Amino acid sequence: MKNLRHLVVVLGDQLDRQAAALDGFDPALDAVWMCEAAEEATHVWCSQQRLAVFLSAMRHFAQALRDEGWPVNYTEQHPGSLAEALAQTLATTRVQAVLMTEPGEWRVQQALQAACAAAGVPLRELQDRHFLCSRAEFAAHARGRKQLRMEYFYREMRRRHRVLMDGDQPAGGEWNYDAENREGFGPQGPGFVPPPVRTAPDAITQQVLALVQERYAMHPGSVAEFGWPVKRAEALRGLHAFIEERLPDFGRWQDAMWEGQPWLYHSHISVGLNLKLLHPREVIEAAEAAWRAGRVPIAAAEGFIRQVLGWREYVRGIYWQQMPGYLELNELGATQDLPAWFWTGDVPMRCLRDAVQQTLQHGYAHHIQRLMVTGLYLLLHGVDPKQVHAWYLSVYVDAVEWVELPNTLGMSQYADGGLMASKPYAATGKYIERMSDHCRGCRFKPAVRTGPQACPYTTLYWDFLMQHEARFAGHPRMALQVKNVARLAEPEREAIRRRASAVRAGQWDAA
Ligand SMILES: Cc1cc2nc3c(=O)[nH]c(=O)nc-3n(C[C@H](O)[C@H](O)[C@H](O)COP(=O)(O)OP(=O)(O)OC[C@H]3O[C@@H](n4cnc5c(N)ncnc54)[C@H](O)[C@@H]3O)c2cc1C
Ligand code: SF4
Image: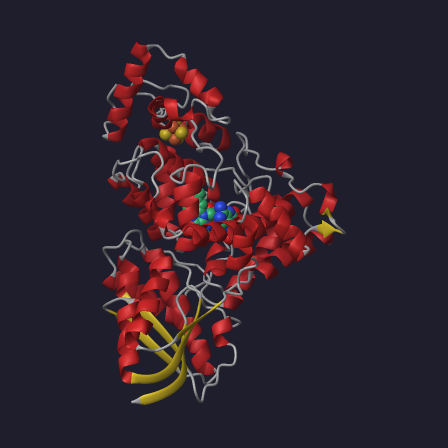
């Protein structure tokens, strides 16, 4: 039986050479432990793109450690769970202690803690230095506040980390420049958009792509096209190209959508960040430096930094503050099943077809597509939040539960009753019409709410307000919307209800 001082567990979203668990690693005494466990591919029906990103990035990370002479205990395609695989290792290796950086998912943390306890091996969990706000700091921020709001958290983070500050004042005089951001493209469309950096698959990635196509052929989506970064150098290349080429227009076009254009002015760095190939500090510093050098307007730099320093850290704080109960929340009592076409994109609604098909093809959709196309539809359709969560966790290459769950269950589905978002993101098809060209070629009409031509969003929006009229009547930010519903006469209400059930049943031509 082998003897080890430390067995250092490195999970698929912990590919950070600077992680605390690797501090003081001694190749003569310690070993790194990594595992491709089948349960991680199947506990939600993981898409082919997401599988390929994680497996390839893990294999590259393990190879880089081996190249440095570090012993790596790496299991490819273990048929069980991470906990079972770890238990097997602990049964055959004498280990003084298991070291692990805090996992990004409550379920995994519980399972690995239990495996170590059952084996009688001490487990030392180390703080994840990747984040700029520790769990304890977030708890301190939340303590004593009746209501949490991202904006106040963000200002605190700006001050604490001296980001976009001139002395004790926000750079440029304002904390938030959103009034200058978030335009639609207008009828002429986006014109030329600098293309994103895509990485050609190397030998390791090609092996992984072949494995995914063979073993996970029944999983959603496809890896026919694959260009995600799987090494730190590749992720850095993508970041720098974004800062130089697309950040100047990021804020302005942040919410805009265009048919057949998945990438637009977004950064596509979430996968690099969430696998920990990139550090948020270097991302924020690069954006601020570009503004200070006069290459980027303040509204774009601030809008981008708010996403990384504000939203990203905030949702992590919420996740760890609220788990495990958060997963069970269903404030609006939504019980419908996820429509089957969410796994194919085979649906006549142009906006949804575009967003779902692009998601399955690339494992990516930008924030407004996730919030105001797929998320909005599922909210209005009334889908069980757990099924919505499982879909988002399955399909996106950047999906890790600490970030996916609060965005899905809280921000997009209002299942937490307003913890993440101060009101439900409920809107008619007119929002999508304003922010994209989808409606132009669609068989439905965004301004119509009943009958076969009615835009499903518009019908379901009115149906949603009717269903939740009493709940939101006294809500300060929903009162106006609810007042409009109160004006509807019963025959109109009946026509809305009829068309809403037809839409939910996929009977698009029914009145
Ligand atoms: C329903 C829903 C599910 C989501 N699931 C995920 C997920 O699984 N993983 C994930 O990383 N993000 C998720 N997001 C947030 C956001 O949509 C993605 O971070 C973003 O689209 C990633 O693309 P990008 O890197 O091009 O981002 P950009 O638009 O270029 O933004 C820059 C960075 O800011 C951060 N960011 C922006 N918005 C958020 C946010 N709301 N929460 C946390 N970080 C944010 C991301 O790290 C992102 O890379 C979700 C949003 C919604 C509405
Ligand atoms: S009309 Fe409705 S369904 Fe069609 S693209 Fe516009 S918002 Fe989407």
